[in-house]
Length: 329
Image (cartoon, rainbow, N blue to C red; front, side):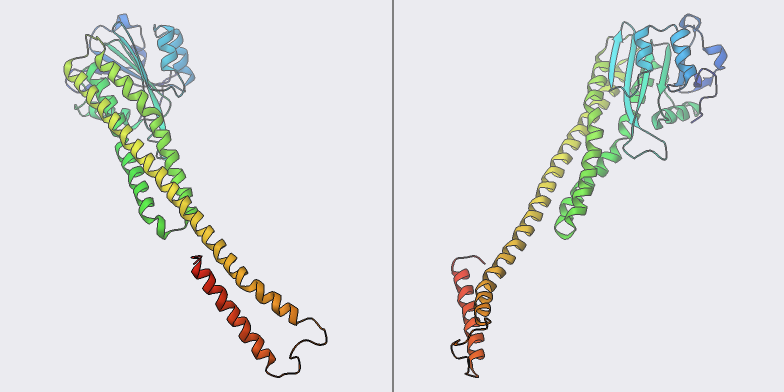
């Protein structure tokens, strides 16, 4: 994506031709109040972190303070505000920065009145890049309604692979848990659960925002656009259900791993207890006969040591029979 070059933080400015294409506009000519934009749909895309973008939006954009605060909001939750024919929309999507974590969720803010579209992003977004490429090839949205519906669909559908990967990882851990190191599995499972929780944090608000937008009484939003917004909201709901199911499986898997670890510990303690019980009387007898006292029975008999060992072996055998009879092993 082209980075912001203009002093006002404008990344690019386009005029939609109504046929899927767009004409690049001169930044100086397009940064004017709405009243001067008489023909076509204009899309102005800003870097919300740029100081120039903040100054232009607050001083020269002509937008009301609520819209400006929404466009410049840092890490807002997905939401939509409809005022007359104006829409202020905040959506979440995956980042396209190579160094970003795969589950990194960026925010895209959109304001439009049907004729003018202003978008702000905090980091490069793959969905915005794809829309710009489609417009360059004459295959992009023709109007504002289609722009919003396609943008929402691109942002949501990009999460499909990531959610499927999280589900697959959870199933894999559940199947290999019995054959792998428990500590390593618990650590990996905790990372997967954190990733799913971060994703799920925004899916519910995003679904509600899209449903609200689809039902809004906007003259420039046609039935086809509403249908796509409803479909995107339903897809978001499916992702919510998938994440919820994956989290439940992850929780069950973690419980099984912890239970398995606890059972192994108890088994080891049990074996050590049995060994201690077996050798305790042996230690007592050998210690008793090791005392340097005169008059120990059969001290002069050469077979006395063999008899002692035999009696100790018999004692161990009797102990094992008693343990088995009690069901201790």
